[in-house]
Amino acid sequence: LIGQKAQKEGYKAYAVGGFVRDLLLGVPNLDIDIVVEQDAISFAHKIVKYLGGEIKEYEKFGTATITLKDGRKIDFATARMEFYPFPAAMPEVEETTIKHDLYRRDFTINTLAFRLNSDRFGEFLDFFEGRKDLEQGNIKVLYNLSFVEDPTRIFRALRFESRYSFQMDEGTMSFLHNALENNVLQKLSGTRIMEQLQAIVSEPNPSVIFTRALELGIIDNIFGQCTKPQQLKKDLRKTVDSVQILQEKSIIEQKDVLLVYLLVLINSYPKKAFEIVLNDFNLEKGSRLIISNFFNGGLDRIERLKSSKHLDPSEIYDALNSLSIHCLCAMMALADSDLLKNRIFLYLEELQKVDVETTGNDLKKMGIEPGPIYSKIISRLRQQKLNGQIHTKDDELNYIKG
Ligand code: ATP
Image 1 (cartoon, rainbow, N blue to C red):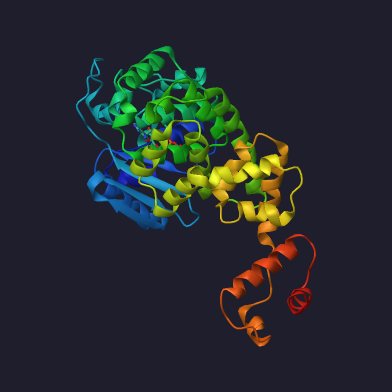
Image 2 (image 1 turned 135 degrees about the vertical axis):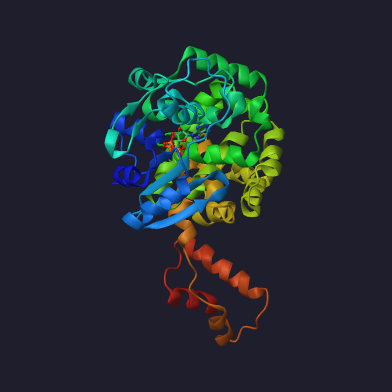
């Protein structure tokens, strides 16, 4: 349909990038990327009239996105011609624009395209041996300075390696090391690093990606020298388990996961990492507070939970109450004993849900003058309830009378 429209209206349109890559790999990818050799925004307007859905345009970038009624997205970008030092002979004139556009991309496996125009629909474009690399499982940059030009590609490489069980080829690895020696990640803004870390934790196994990043010196490039790399690898593996357990129980959501990994990572780095995250990562105030609390006293609160053999449920509650779920999930991951891990889990799954039913109004009706005594009574009731001494609201009221 898009191809017919392109043909009729005189546009040249190509399916490109991740969509084509995943199509050839047989992996589902609902988002379609289309490059148009003319103005992509005007083309997208013609298509949205045809297919329905909602259109958003980004004038500055010459791009537009249509969100179809079923939620699928089609991205339209105008083919970009930029100077590039590619030494090979120029292709036929009509292919120059799309070839330039594809050359700007991150890895050869993302440079595959096929024509959508109905006269040559499906004709496959593979200027940079992307198909061969796809078959051989290679992540390969298109030019030496690719990682220097855009360091976010370093994280993208790791994600693709893990997602498809691919590997960077030798040349790409040496360009990567070169880029790291030049500290390219320190030039990347905290916001862009956060976007990349977010993308990593959205992959099925973030711990494998972070571990690879650690081994390649990528995390050290951001945070300084890791103080306990072997321990961090173990902690990362345990983080996957803790996140999974708590997600299955609907105690944490996907949006909470990044913060959990950040806490685990910072824990194995010198103080500088903590400062970088707080000052440069452009986090919301709430997230900064959580990180700050975790390293300023939060972690110490589990000391008692580690050492005491017997603890009443109310004592576990008091130790963990007021720590955020991110902190608790990270503490579960960092826990060095099952006892500690089980206690945190008990708090999250049961103890934090124990509610006192008696209200201020009830206390007033009982003739107790409002004041600080109210919160004392409520916390006493909670303690009794947590320890299983009372159960119902009647029990609570009788306990107060007694
Ligand atoms: P994912 O599946 O994680 O969404 P993707 O490659 O399918 O990855 P996008 O991240 O939306 O999807 O990128 C779309 C296309 O844009 C890629 O296939 C690639 O060709 C190009 N691209 C994205 N980021 C970069 C980058 N940093 N440098 C060069 N090209 C990029």
